[in-house]
Amino acid sequence: MTRKIEFFDTTLRDGEQTPGVSFSIDEKVAIAKQLEKWGITVIEAGFPAASPDSFEAVQQIARSLKTTSVTGLARCVISDIDKAYEAVKDAVHPQIHVFIATSPIHLQYKLKMTEEQVLASIKECVSYARSKIDVIEFSPEDATRSDREFLLKAVQTAVDAGATYINIPDTVGYTTPAEFTEIFTYLINNIHSEREIIFSPHCHDDLGMAVANSLAAIKAGAGRVEGTVNGIGERAGNAALEEIAVALHIRNDFYEAQSPLNLAETVNTAALVSQYSGIAIPKNKAVVGANAFAHESGIHQDGVLKNALTYEIITPELVGLTHNALPLGKLSGRHAFTEKLNALGISYKTSDIDTLFAKFKRLADKKREITDADIRALVSGVIIKN
Ligand code: KIV
Ligand code: ZN
Image 1 (tube, rainbow, N blue to C red):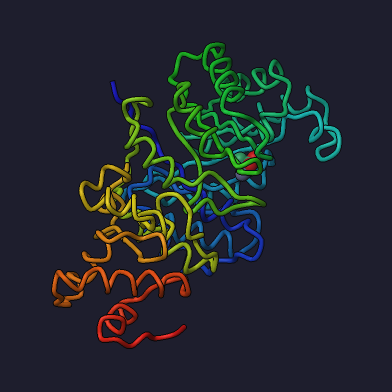
Image 2 (cartoon, rainbow, N blue to C red):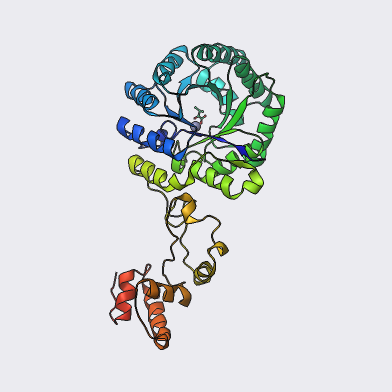
């Protein structure tokens, strides 16, 4: 049975915590509208208590969206919850996201609180948030470095106080897929509630495992997943939602879960966030990088020309592209070269192919990228230099 996983996008909150990134309110509203078009379930539009602009952005987004839920982040502090409530209350589906740290290092140095004080704060703040709004998510920050039994107590306290969603943040990107599976299994099996409680992972990428950890949590029973577009976020970033969505689609046989996303809007969404954040998408990034559907070596190009499935597990069309690319370079073969001549409408005699291909190989040894103009020049006997 395929489960539908809720997608929680925090590009406008955790994504904006990327060093150097600051979205204007108009940019945030435009991104939120694109996220709605993409099919995101809930948008964390910001941290309303952080600044007047943050509040204004969350409020404008809450008032602009037609179907998507909107949430605002709040520390376990009554005044933060009041601000979050005021900012999201006009949304069609408002939510509030309350968090407090549960790891020993955060309790000792950051919060300077005992475990009992943290539990009392969770009880007070989650109940207060729940008295204002029906849907509350609670996050025990730095969950993966927290004592497991205390983590369970914190989560149970939040559930008893009215939280419906329990988000488990791997705040510093510390966990591994196997360990995260254990954490989710332990919490899901030991939580007591009459209501349905939905768990979600919120992973950071410090060890390059944010997407793998998120997928492990889904496999272990999470019903919601959190992340950002293009994986932007604090330090090494957050889990890239487009990668998780496409992984669920391609490996549905394994995960038995699917995203709610309209995947054909993936490339548009990634491009918009890249443009407004000023963070370029790495060429080799999975799913939306410029090279994600480019095949350079002769063996691969020959295979793809015969049947794209030989080297493509994702079709370009799935994520909103029209075609793949076979860039010509020194590793390209005769098959891709003649396809390029045909695509450019260049007529040639079959008997000339050996000579033309040899000329092309000599040029490719000198130039990193062979352009269409190079090919035309090569055929007419003139070589354009970089
Ligand atoms: O990474 C984190 O712990 C967070 C929380 C606020 C959920 O972003
Ligand atoms: Zn985070």
